[in-house]
Amino acid sequence: MLLETASTDLLTIKNHLDLTAKILADLIQLYKNEINPNLDFGEAYIETLNIKILLATNTGLQLANGQNLKVLDKEIQIIDISSLYVVARTIIECFLTIEYLFVNDISQEERNFRFKLWKIAGFMMRQQPINDINQIHSAKIESEKEEIDKLKKEVKASQFYSQLSKNQIWKLDAYGIPRTISWSDLLSKSSINTKLLDGYYKLYSNYAHSEFVSIMQLKQMNLNIASQIAIDNLTSTLNNIRIINCVLINLFLQKFEESKEIYERFDDKTKYIIDFWNSFATKEQ
Image 1 (cartoon, rainbow, N blue to C red):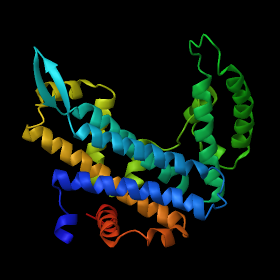
Image 2 (image 1 turned 180 degrees about the vertical axis):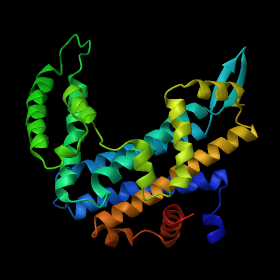
Image 3 (image 1 turned 60 degrees about the vertical axis):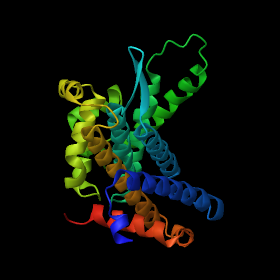
Image 4 (image 1 turned 90 degrees about the vertical axis):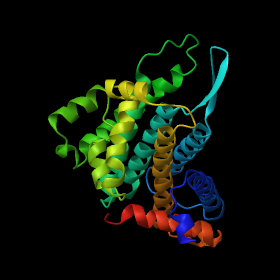
C-alpha cells in the first residue's frame, strides 16, 4: 500500500484526486447534515472556499484528459497546460486564504479583523461600475455600500487597525485590502512545506498574468499529449493539487473536532492516502 500511495505515476495521482475530492465533498456535507455546528464569525465561508477548491480540482482533472484540436483538417490531442497552471494557482491561493482567515494561530479578535478586511475588499470590488443595462443588481450594490461603511467603522475601531501601514490604510479607503500579508509570505508561513510549492506558485502566477516568460515557455513547449515534457508538467501540477487536497482535509478535521467521527467511516485505504500525503507535505523536507 505504501508504494502505491507514494507513487507519482500520472494515473495513480488522478485516481487519488478522484478519491480525495469525493471525501472532502462528503465530509463537508455529512458534517453539515449531522452536526450542524454553531460557527464562529465568518466560518460559514470555509464551506464555500472548500467548494471552490473542489470545483477547481475537478476542472484540473478534466484538463488532464486532454482535448482535441483541429489544425489544417488534422486532429491532434493536446494538454492545455497553461490553463491547468492557472487552475493550480487558484487552488493554492484558495487554500492559503482558508489558512489565513480560519486556521492561523491568532486571537479571535484578529481573526474577525482579517475577515472584515476580506469582506470589505469583496464588497468594494462589486461597487466598481459595470455596463449593466438592466441594472439587475443595483439595489443589492446600493445596500452593500451601507455594509461597507459599517464594516470600515468596525475595522478602524479595532486594536489591529494601528498595525496597518500608511499604504495599506490608503488602499483600504480606496478599494479595500483583502489580506494584510502577501501571497509569498502566506506561502512561507503555510502548514505546507514552502519548498514544495514556492517555485511552482511563481510559475503558475506567471501564466495567470501572461508574463513574457510564460509566453516564451509556452512557445517552446510541446503540448502534444504524448510528449514527455507535457506529461511531466501535468504530473507535477496534479501532484501539487493532490497534496493540497490531502492537507485541506486534515485541516478540516483539526478545525472541527466532531468531523473526525464522520471521517472514520471512510475506507482505510483512502484514509491512508490522505494521511500519507498530509504528513509528507507538512513535515520538514
